[in-house]
Image (cartoon, rainbow, N blue to C red; front, top):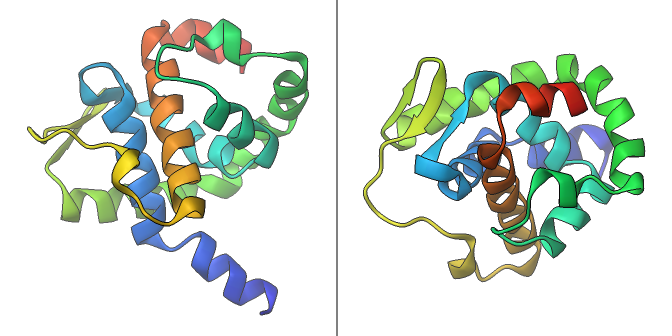
Length: 151
């Protein structure tokens, strides 16, 4: 499989929208600050950060998430934001076509049902979904200004 094919699979709008949906589902009141949505994909696609998120729980905090290894990886995340902006916008468009969401200052998942990663059968997908779910939980517990200061 060549790089272009791999990229098409990894950045498939259905998959990336599901990652955003899982982050929203994990967040408090199913909502995240619009600016934080743009951090979801670059954080989830970083293996070191994703692995730390998979080992985290919904009760984890931003401070417990920020170990020295993660802090080193966050240095490159800022540079990657521009590369992920288009993919995040595509994922948001796809997400808005699949689910009832509201996009203003916050992206809000308006679904009544409980959405969770635990029902996923594929272990690789489940790992990504759990990481996104936990990331949403962690990001929604802190003031977004504090998060931007640390990112």
